[in-house]
Image (cartoon, rainbow, N blue to C red; front, side, top):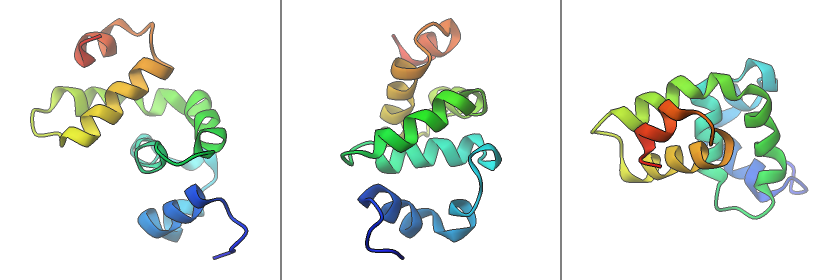
Length: 102
């Protein structure tokens, strides 16, 4: 671990491990992208690295969001993350907006 890495990158290495972190952006799954956003959303500066990934590969996240928003067993913190992603990245997606209550 390089001490020069931003805090959000260090958190991702700790939580997701080297297998996920060694993937290129286009290799990340929708679940990976959701987890990356979820784990870093409250860390200053993370959006500079995370937002472009979701903006570019967001279509992979849509099924994950649909599943989280539809599942009554989704933990509250993940539900809030799913709603936040919909609000920020998919405001025109009527199906997601409906599922998120927006």
